[in-house]
Length: 428
Image (cartoon, rainbow, N blue to C red; front, side, top):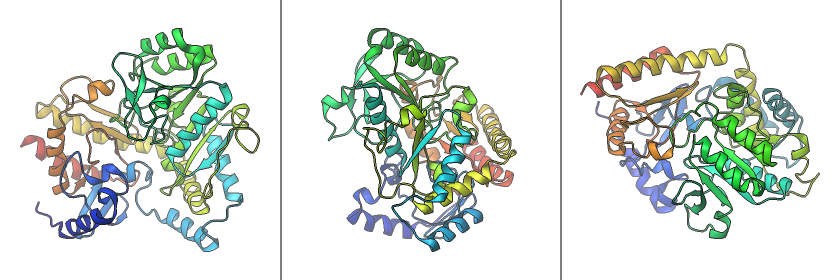
């Protein structure tokens, strides 16, 4: 399939003169796969349309928020009505209360909530709250889990099993990074050993209960329960970053699937219905430490923005219907079972990880359980696959280490279209 991308090429060249790297978030620049990013004109359902008029079946879904697909009519109507009443007030509204109650009903671990403007802000705020509540400084995260670009969390592991964090960005003080300890994902023994030696110094452990920022990697049996037990035994808080998994893998997120109640939960993406919004919440005793009730300060001019609240409330209303998650699970299973069969016939033993509404195909010849094993994936082979699919009208995340998303708007016909293109690729 020969597609023209003349306008995208022109726009990218112009954008590079005024936007850093030509984009407003790094992965959009196609840096890990090469080539020209597609400049999107519009989206409808499961389809994206670029400025050259090309159509693509979308498996990015704005990186997770669009569980209903692009421009769902009820969501766009809710946004339009909200905009007509005013785009921002800097004051409380009744719909904020409605959305808060909707989230609290979905997540039994949340008794009180604070809305913010992004997932990064939610994670950053939860870390500050954990430190303020416990009176401790040390944070534990897991290599390959991404929690936004705040200073305490933008770190990687140093040499050795359980290490102090090493900054992954310029501008992060080494002294601050050293307050973050980085462990391998799915390594319950490393967690146990760390708490045995330093448990009383740890303010919180933050984790994606299902990893989605190094590709989709599910937690191994008892891994999350080990973390929860260690936190309970040592007075540390467990923070679930459910920015991606919240309202996607289940209405109550991964904590509903695994029946584990974290102390704090970070939400984003779906909770704002595709508009900028994040949230963090937990037990009232902990949340009451946040200003204006407590001494942990956090504020935001656009927090609880009425447009995002309207989009989020309408989205949650729609997906709260009983058939939503069985339907989304069935779509994902159908697609991934078929893709697995295609790989088997082609003699490819690549790991295909999936859960409700999301999946990752690793171009790897070994089991993928953590960041170290994920990094052994053949990124050149992935890049070839990515561009072959793009040229066939299938829009995948432009990185091996990202989740692909299936929405409720993906039809069997859509999924069969992608499977047909993938089968042709692997046959070749």
